[in-house]
Structures are given as structure tokens and as C-alpha cells.
Image 1 (cartoon, rainbow, N blue to C red):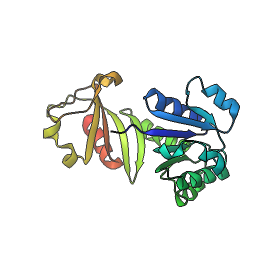
Image 2 (spheres, helix red, strand yellow):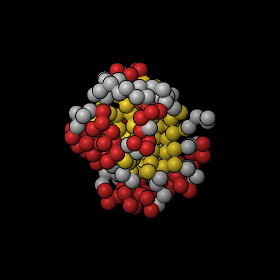
Image 3 (cartoon, one colour):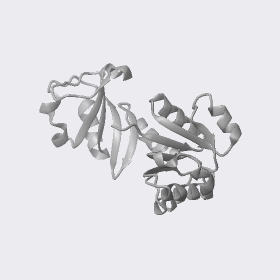
Image 4 (cartoon, helix red, strand yellow):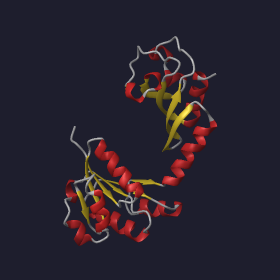
Length: 221
């Protein structure tokens, strides 16, 4: 599989955290901010870090944008700069563009001009927290859209049946994409049909929110 090349634009707290995380995951990252002082601070952590006003097409063309697979726009505090940056990246052929929106009303604007994904950090955090505090056994919760969510669920019982016999997709409408044995992140693995769930495990599952709730009730009744 070809290694993806990310471009993170806007190196405030949100953007710099994304850039650092991608680098820590061994991704190829071009970090960009129009403030030279910000770039100089980040350079020690992200060598491929440049100063550029991405709202300016002439300036953006000087970067190696054609090789970018996914651009993440984290400017946040400037609607005009975000709009111009999205438009410029689309014209230069960047296939995937994720944009941070500070206001709900910006979301439709970004979608109309070609953003492929829009993130409203405060809304996402609030939804995750609200769902997590509703249950002590839902440890992490991420909205995926269309009624679906990616959820970490604590296992409160020993389940005698294997995953294959449980037939979770038909019984609960969910898919398990990972298991943290004993709840430990360093013991994460992709499950097999012969695996059994044990008390203290954490399962990472995907499904409709109502179905995930039923699965949570089954594991923690």
C-alpha cells in the first residue's frame, strides 16, 4: 500500500496536535502555517514544516501540493482563508480535504465548495463526552455519521461463546474491529472468529448507536 502524504495547514493547538500525531504514526507530513514564528517553533518536531499563505494560489503552487493525498485545514479562526484554501487545493487536484469548522453554519459552505470532511472539534468532543458519561462501560465514543459510531466498550462478563457463534452482525448489527486484552492498549489485536470475550477486555466496535447500546447492555447486564 502506498504511504499517504498528509498536509496540515494551520499550526495552532488543534493543527499542531494533528501534525505531531501523524508524525508519531510514521506518516509523511507537510506542516504549513503562514506565521514564520509558528513554523520555527514547530520545525524541531516536524522537519517538513514551511511558512506559506495557502489562501494565496501563487504561494501555494510553490509547494509540492500535487503529491498530497489528504489535506487537513485547521485554520479555524478565518472563514475567508479556509474558503480560499479549500478552493485552491481543489483546483490543484488534492483528492481529500478535511476542514476544521469553528461554527456549525460554516459546515454547509465548506461542503458546497468541495471539502470532503468537516470537523467541528467542540461538537465532536461534546457528543463523545455526553455518550461516555451516560454509561460507565462506554469508554470512548466517536460519531461516524448516518447514525453510526465507533465505540470502545468494556466487557463486564465472561462470554462462553466464540465470536463466530455469537454472530454479532446478525444478533446485534455491530462489527468488532479490535480487542484490547485486559483493557490494555499495548495488547490490542484484530479479532478472529474463534476468540472469546473475557471480563476486563475492551472491544472496539462499529455500528448504529442503538445497536451499540444493545451490545453494551449484553456485555454489562
